[in-house]
Image (cartoon, rainbow, N blue to C red):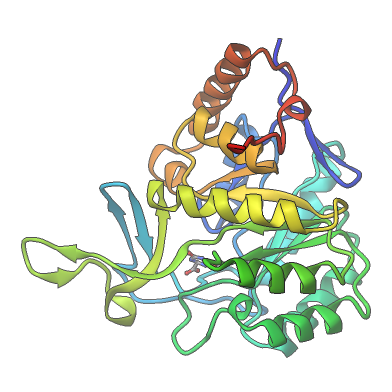
Length: 313
Ligand SMILES: O=C1NC(=O)NC(C(=O)O)N1
């Protein structure tokens, strides 16, 4: 029987699949649905200190090969998700979960990190450095000096297990530069990628941008993202200290897509657009399909093929 068990640092998960932050994880009810699904764990919607309404609708649209979104970090505020996480870990001590935070400033990120550090949260924290959709706010992950500064300040006091959610990079020199920064810090994981920032799609009937915020600019997810996600996971798995594990996010529509992210080096696989469109039952299908691919290949465990992408010699 194929085993989908995986781990990050000391944390064990009985299944490689989980949601991508922002998808079906805004409310306690949505989070409970994820917890009851076949997913191995879950991550909360990226939190800001205070509750946010986010951008005006329409702010999400399904596309032929994925999705476009400019949600603008709508969320219930950090306390809401921290409260959920503390209750969850009491009820499910054997199921570690992820808490995602996305401060709109250095001060906000550090303030939220202090709140979490001072709490009894015993899961993993995902610092989102890559939201592309807050008007006027650049993606921290594209500013190397700022990233260095945020992580330096953060790890001057933060001791809980943490990682970062990165935007996609498209230049090998950027992989080198970013990996050199990330390797300086006690990160447990790097999650690549967030949506392909600031795409644009058009309604053919009305010649109008599909979504309202930012003149129609928004993050692109789904099948469009797969080759970029594979490259980013692979590039960082080749450059990061082995202590820093990869989470692969982007373009997962079936078991083979998940298998490919694991081949590229991912220890966990996050699902966004597909989960948004198919619901938590997607995890049951993905699990079945990944097991089938593994069986075909003669693998019985994730470790049999993780990071084993071959190249032409
Ligand atoms: O980090 C994010 N990535 C996205 O694609 N969208 C959300 C958002 O807009 O809140 N945030």
